[in-house]
Amino acid sequence: MKKVAVIWSSPNADGLTATAKNQFVKGLIGAGADVEEIHLNKKVLEHCKACGNGWGTCNKNGTCLIQDDFEDIYKVIADADGIVWISAVYWSDMTECFKAFFDRLRRCDATRNHFLADKRCVLMACAGGTGRGSLECLTQLERGLNHMGMRVYDRISVVRYNKDYILPALESAGATYAKTLDAGFDMYY
Ligand SMILES: Cc1cc2nc3c(=O)[nH]c(=O)nc-3n(C[C@H](O)[C@H](O)[C@H](O)COP(=O)(O)O)c2cc1C
Image (tube, rainbow, N blue to C red):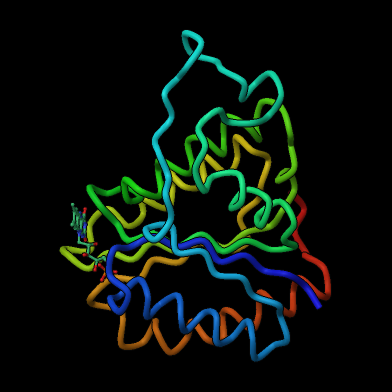
């Protein structure tokens, strides 16, 4: 059974982002995946202090000096076979909370640990306003994942205007990702 970490961020426990996440998770579980969800907004996560004039312990030994929930979440992700990254769209980008975590993860993983390299991920951006910015958010997420050597299997944009047909499809998307983790990815990169 493959382990899948679902990392998501929105302050709303029952908004568009949470609904999209729940649909995807339903599909993952239905296809037999072992799912661990991490709701970043419920965690204690400081932003990077750029200590040591820019590089702190992150690029020296792959750890962050700040004592909060960061290291525990990092362990879950490093241990997972698959990772689903889901953020509400704020300012055409990931949420501030997501960014705080992602920045520190990139510093530790891209420069030193490489625990996440080659993991195949799914990205989801949930834009409940105009819908503008969901693609930029996905692009920003993918840029960070690429720095860490991860690869994107699918990029999903959920907006107010497509939710009636996208939300039902997300269950099937979750099942497909779980099955592909089992069967192996047909990706040349
Ligand atoms: C600070 C802030 C910035 C936002 N920026 C955007 C945006 O750029 N594009 C958009 O479509 N919606 C934007 N929204 C709306 C969120 O995407 C919307 O709240 C969305 O539904 C998030 O999911 P939720 O239902 O889980 O909160 C913004 C909301 C906030 C609070």
